[in-house]
Image (cartoon, rainbow, N blue to C red; front, side, top):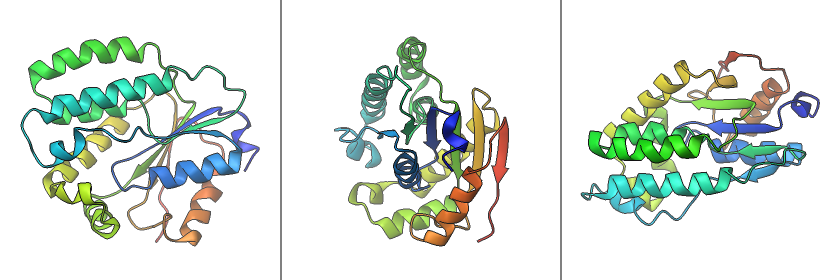
Length: 211
């Protein structure tokens, strides 16, 4: 597997909530002896946003934008591989779902300025999953703050990810359908995915494992 990753020095793992991003990023970072970049946590507005409180969408989005920017603007030395459990562009996916037109105009002023200073991954791994699979995993995980997420919102997020990655071309992209596999809890499924990642990825390629 190490030979595959001699070229990609910056890998990002993406997907909607409970797709398995953090697990796969951790495994890849351990395997590659890479530096792992973890999605910012501790957003003080997030729980209130999930609960539907007015005015929380913009505050939540701007907090994430600033934190992600601060993390990724420091990525300059790729002598050691880097594995991130998010793609900077994900911030804009959620902005278009959550913000009003006026809020989005203001958000975009900052986003465009920050994006110009952020490096682009050489390889992106998009963990795709159906809304039903995501809902089941959220219920099974039982994280208190996530219980307030509506089913409609999960469906919106899944659709937004599908649209974004259908048009994505900034780097090599591997789309992994995780609907019928569970590499977070099933080691056999994890090894199946790692075996695919031991092969080169050029352009956009798809991996549709059988559950």
